[in-house]
Image (cartoon, rainbow, N blue to C red):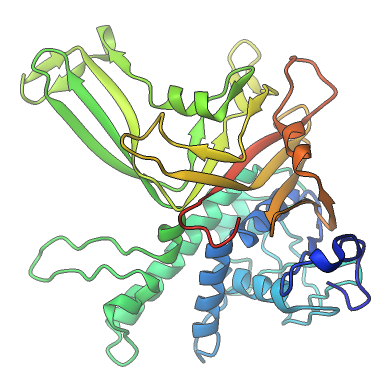
Amino acid sequence: MGAAGSKLEKALGDQFPEGERYFGLENFGNTCYCNSVLQALYFCVPFREQLLEYYSNNKNVGDAEENLLTCLADLFTQMLASTVEVVSKHFRVARACGLVETLVGNSILYSNDVIMFRLPIENGDTISGELEACFAFGKVEDAHEFLNFLLNELVDILEKEAQAAKSDPETSSPPEKIANGPKNGHANGVRKEPLVTWVHKNFQGILTNETRCLRCETVTARDETFFDLSLDIEQNSSITSCLKNFSSTETLNAEDKFFCDKCCSLQEAQKRMKIKKPPHILVIHLKRFKYIEQLGRYKKLSYRVVFPLELKLSNTMEDSDIEYSLFAVVVHVGSGPNHGHYVSLVKSHNHWLFFDDENVEMIDESAVQTFFGSAQEYSSNTDHGYILFYESISASSKS
């Protein structure tokens, strides 16, 4: 916090956690979707700690290129260690992270605890043309799409670094040190196992799609990985019921029959999706934006969906008593998908905080339920939980 202290610091008094920092992020023009996701990731403690460890181990490498990964690590370092002022290199802001694409001066942490986050230029432009196309300055973007882009981009960078290290015998590291998650491949044409980075270790889970032929009873299982679960929602429901529907059994018949390899023909079948391996950090995306054919456009579903502070996966995972604790919520504010605002709720050291771009304030835990949604279709309340972040209690180092 600032040297003179802040309202939040004064409000917490002796309860203010030692070594923790709470900063707002400047809005550069409809960049709230970026800010809300960054706050949630910052308070994902395992992710933050491993990102900073990576930064500490790699920031002194002379030929290291600046990229999204190093810039995110630099931002988190500034947020964690700063008091009054932060000074960093000149950056051109990348639209991909929702920030102004103009050449700006040094990154300054203002007295009201605001950090201006900037990404580096690459080859005289923003990080890539792809980012330009995906995230445009001045336009309200989708926070869920940004989160997916960010995590996948970090994985791509780590995988490229690991491949570069393996191809350079002078700089290569032992397999277990590559990207914090080695999977040493085999030679002689044997299929190599995919690299597991610390991003995977935090966010990746495995789903199993099981299809049972109703004629021969043969079960075909196909695994797929995920960084988040996107759930269909219903009015006056809960995350538990949404997860139950996600894993409900679907019958494949008529035009949707399943081709059974054993029967060598199309057969009626039953299909079910369930979680085979749960992630340490469970991210749940509520599908609040639905395309309505009659309207020819997307509509926001303001449905009331209760998300508990503690969650079990018994409805979607067999033989599991794993439990999760809610630590962050990205909230969409507004009545439609093409306009509105994003804010985030974060739990840190048993205190709930409300982040609205540069503004930070403490809220009571009971206030979280005001973001469940609206029990009626037309309501003045347009603040609805959109992305939920849960941490496995067994893997959590904090409540």
